[in-house]
Image 1 (cartoon, rainbow, N blue to C red):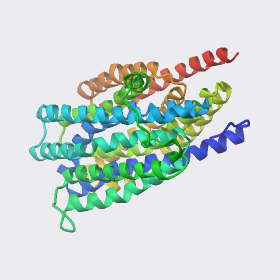
Image 2: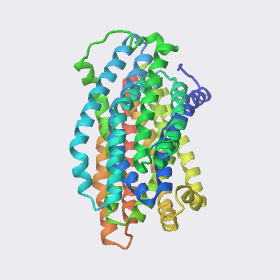
Image 3: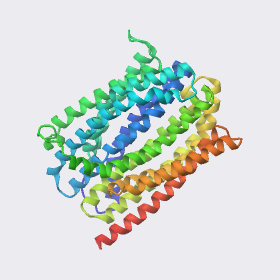
Length: 451
């Protein structure tokens, strides 16, 4: 990364950071897509089981990954402030924290997965698939969290192309392993939806090992000598990271868990409804990779400029990213409206699931604009290391407004399962408005400091 002085220069640097980030996010999403897509072609029961398992797993994964994402703005600000010597210590403490979180998650999982699944009204085959999927993917928690730290280090340096290359390797690996374990090909056991969890866990190990090789062998990462130096565990450093990471993680958790909660609440409906809902959410999440990637790019760029106290440049990057996200949201919404039938056909051949999914996808259109505003603003605020209000906004908009409204619409109107989607859309809209107000406030404060 380098200082920019004009809008064309900023636009060029923005896309240099963004495009590899977008490819990375789409590739990472591809793993979840393969899980859903290939499980759906195994059977509707496997698809529903993976849907339930994923709905429990994703909030844990994204929430705790959010804590570790704090490494990105920390590294970006250190580089912007020309304090590069402090980067190795920050990254190693992130790795230590990732290991501690992994152990904690695995222990909690052993205690709560069975009781949680038993509280749901699920067909026996669906419950068994969800249980097996969760325990299989649990074997990949440690490498996934450690890789998140290594990826955040590389991204914080602005080297998003390297994380793109590493992540691109994961997609064919995961696809092939899914094929082997879900369908029992090439002599591997036929595990159905459980095989998706096995494939994902193995892929996490492959990617983590590759990332370690990269940071030790290739410049500029090797120049920081991250793992070649001895660093003791520093709880003070953990505290600094958690001050930023916990609000980020909980904000992400509140956002992703609301979708998971809706899927779990869908268990009161039949397997066809669960499968159609999950497939539609899966594709809406695919489209969300665009504003999410813009969010990550803004965290890096705004963090770099804020670290150098160039707040005018940080503000310009914020609005550049926001404008691109809104433009892309319009394109995605039009695509969904015109091709909902083709999209549904990708996921299933079951006519009942296909027809219901098309209806869910029409509601997903309204997700696009709110996501295009909220996600980039979250990224910009993280770049400023302003994360606490984002947490409050996420909690209120999703859990105080969105979910209760969805429950009311589902049980006290004729909307049925679509009522939950109305609640989600409303929560996202309130969240976008609240985050925009916070961004304006933070930028005014930084402008006064600079003055």
